[in-house]
Length: 47
Image 1 (spheres, one colour):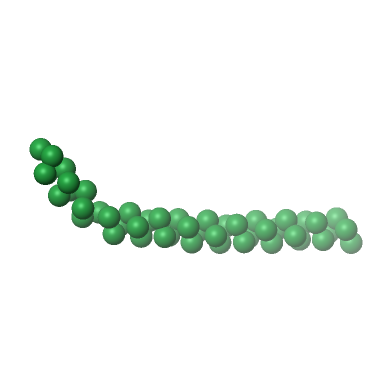
Image 2: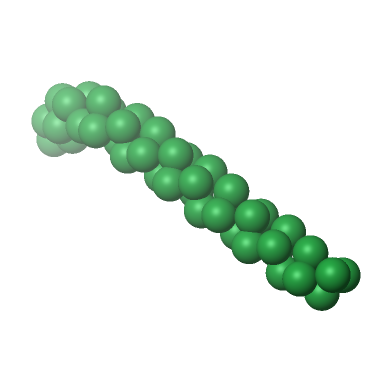
């Protein structure tokens, strides 16, 4: 039972890393968009 579980877990490691990388990429893009929107809002308030 234990060996079966480890053999199953070794395979999706690449998919997990890819999912983490895609999540970080999307998070970074969302962060940049949010930061841009905040700067635009502050600029509109100041001007």
